[in-house]
Amino acid sequence: MLKLAKLPDRTPVKIAITVTPDLAHTLADYAAIYNRAYADKAAVADLIPAMLETFLASDRAFAKARRDVESGT
Image (tube, rainbow, N blue to C red; front, side):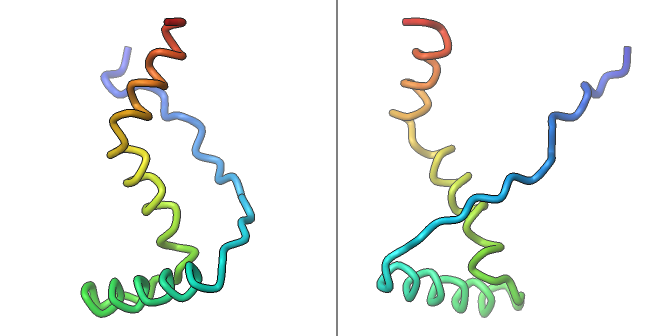
């Protein structure tokens, strides 16, 4: 058996969202600052998945509740 396990499904899933004008402006500002900080040209749509992953990974209450649901407690 190989040491590396089979890779999980990496097929992208497209999700459309609607945001308030204020949030759209804030996201555009974030992208501009990100691009300046990293000398990059990432669009807001490129940053949102990473932002969501970071947010979810840092939410301890969510992680605990998810574990509880998965374990049936």
